[in-house]
Image 1 (cartoon, protein in one colour):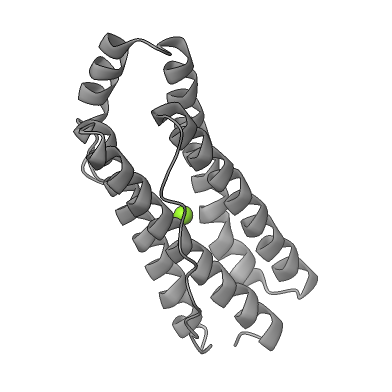
Image 2 (cartoon, rainbow, N blue to C red):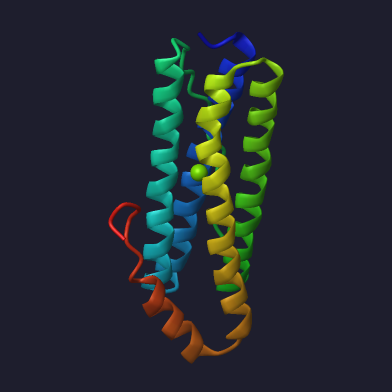
Length: 167
Ligand code: MG
């Protein structure tokens, strides 16, 4: 069974995943507005992945006989200066999320809760991948900066992203 502290930490984690999903949906809407449909598609897949992460945490809290408590989700940002700025924002968000995940891992270790510690390792690994993918997109965008042709080609490229498990 989860102790009170870890239950709170996991409920916070659940909220972070939903907040992240909400932010990615806001980013998708920004790109839809710019008619960059490939970028919008990429962001929507990311949104769906974050929802799946939230569901993982939800299931784990229940499996451990804990109590899920849903918390408020803050209004996400909705305007960015440029597509590059939007992806830099996404990268900062992933880095912040990694830090929160590490905090839960530390707490699990401090409490001697090996089940939570093991469960969280999936998220630790996932964040390495998330950060690398978004960082690569940011550096590609920095290469094509100011080039509308480059943006068009990247938009087409990102349109081909498939949901996890279907790649
Ligand atoms: Mg996530």
